[in-house]
Image 1 (cartoon, helix red, strand yellow):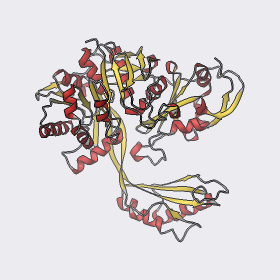
Image 2: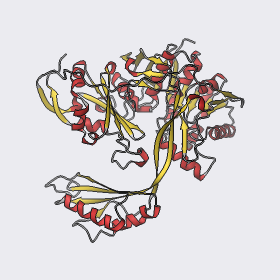
Image 3: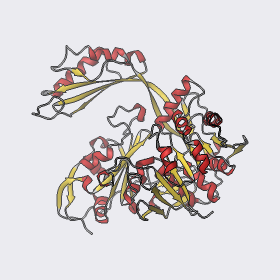
Image 4: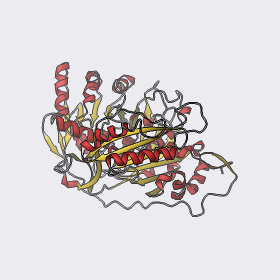
Length: 558
């Protein structure tokens, strides 16, 4: 078929807008509607669910969303593809079957499994599978396809394989669809959600619609949204999402390595952006594996320090807490949110966050939080805390591993119950090392400058990958790009964001996007669930960078 495949997305994470499925089905024509529920943290949550009840392990909210939408999707011929199966895709498929029976509907349900790996020392261990199992289910007539841990983009690539008949060797087409999948996987984030220049959106960013990718037989696509929905689809909103949670120019996947430095974006009318030129190369011979373990227990208490002598007050609390519970596992973070000579308590106060992580739930629990509360009448002047004493909670540690492509039993379970093994790709290639790129040796050209916030000229998008983070920065004009690529070095980044100075930082340029991407190794420690950082997923890191006041080019070169 030569007509484009219209794939919408109605969920970017476990907890996304509950009405999005209905909005997408009612908003206009679709061929496929996808839902992404699985972040690294979600797998930990589902793992804990499964400990309590072995029949769980999938995203329960999806069933509630589907109850009001399944009949509409079947009536309109919209096929549903979701990774909400999490750790138990067979269980979710069975639950959808029961839901259909209760609603008096006939739904053909397929599912994909084989991502779960037997690792007795792990709470969860799941390989990131590719898209061909999804395609096999759709080829067999499935109305609904449920997966466990596949790559986020596979939810879109699978339907495209089924529609256009691509094979393993159609690398450029697979890469193009991978980019389309990456762009819509985070829901409204590509239609103006979390966008640096949100004040420029037609509705001010109040309620962005969810995205659609119109995929063509060659793998090119057009990003758009239903008419009348909020937000916008522009080259810049698409650029922002393309930079989200990526590393070097080679974007590794189980079916193809997508070369992000070949992506070309162009306006294609109102709320339409065309994505072309994407090139792909053979995938690596290994699959990424996400491993979650329980790391211990954690607790936090926050002291409010008002007025004068803030460092001395913080030092007093530190000494008192350490004397009460010992020093092991304690972390003290002083947030200087205070302002001098102001007339209200909140504006004059700093916050001292005290964190404790320990393998002993008792020590991290009320033994710690009660010790903090006991200081209320015996510490610094004005002593107060923001919370009552509470118990410790478990936290998880995420690590990434690899397994050979042939080391998993990737299986498509068709609506008939037939199990179809999905063979690994016949051709693989060791991934080329994406060497970090230094800025041009001549640096930025000399020109008149003015003081201003960096964000006046550039946008940014940041996010997490396990214990690492990425920070993508794009220029709004060619002239600004000519300045930015020579100015924003690793060393400059360390000056602007001092917490990155001690880290291994990799820098990559994406000239087609007028962008530079930084990978910050170890910024998030043992991963999101274990991080005590104020911004544990590094989502605000880009906006912090944009807020820094620097010497901007007064008259950028045209």
